Length: 268
Image (cartoon, rainbow, N blue to C red; front, side):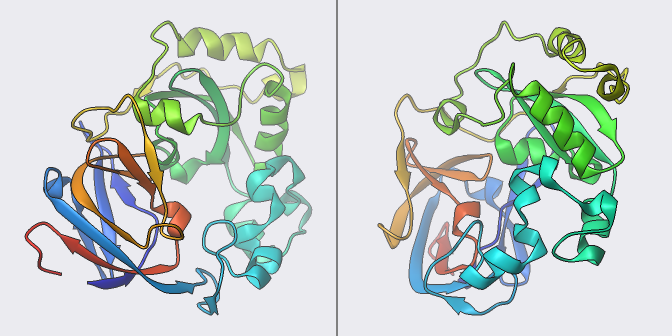
């Protein structure tokens, strides 16, 4: 079936359920683990914002113009401390008000190390799943994206803000991590005005991914270098598909790519 790729949709339960959008239908990929998947890139990329055809994808599915002008690609997406929504400013004031001048959470996520991050409160646990976290804890609740970003910056000196994607996809863990202990240690690193946003909630959220067996080595694939990708679907974690055990492809990185997908018995 021909489709324009979007990020994988997820639902958390005892095990995360993954859905891929094939035109107007969301198909559960969990049902196809252990079966064949074939994806053929058809040579067209559609901007996720303006729907224009673009020769190259910038960011996560933008054409060059939208990457530089659209609010969805604002610099404060990557650097929330630059957000000006609370000042009534931004690339699109209405967009900023709806999505950035809203309650945001600062959190710790754990894999092989502790990572600090932020997200809008409505994006929990989706954000953690998209990053492939094995567990997470909420540190602070703030009234806007800017304040959450300031807290994140203050903690970056002691904690990483990037996920090691290879360690995450191999399921390399540090079992000694105590997120509750790390939370209160982190509070002590902040000035009083920022520490005031910390929550009392000590709940640790665990996430289980549908992966048959984690690989010891990885082979990353992308459609720009490999337009035809085919093999046995062996699991999903973060926004990645595992194929034949050790091969992985990041679906979100290919947002806007037109592909022909065949799942299971060969019917598209």
